[in-house]
Amino acid sequence: MLQSLRYTIDAIRDEARNLVHQGVVSRQQPIYTLCRFIPAREWALVESELEVNGFLLRDRVSDLVGREDWDND
Picture 1 (cartoon, rainbow, N blue to C red):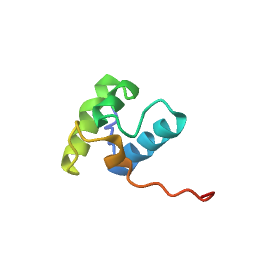
Picture 2 (cartoon, rainbow, N blue to C red):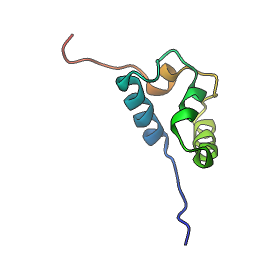
Picture 3 (tube, helix red, strand yellow):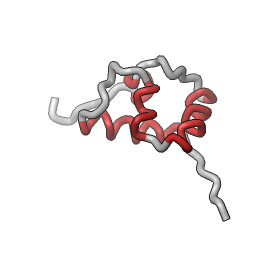
Picture 4 (cartoon, one colour):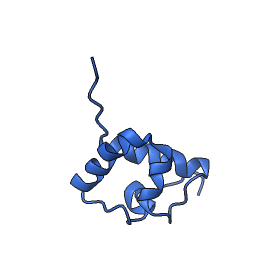
């Protein structure tokens, strides 16, 4: 039996934050850059969730992950 995958906007944001922290994605890159790190068969689900939440693939990753606060500043 196949499980239905669902990507929430919070899960997508968390993944984007992780990729930014790892240095493999820049906050200034477009959101569609994330497709390199998500299996192709699942990208349509991610794209749909982004759309529902008002994000365009050309928007910046920084728009998706929002402002970050640093404790050591």
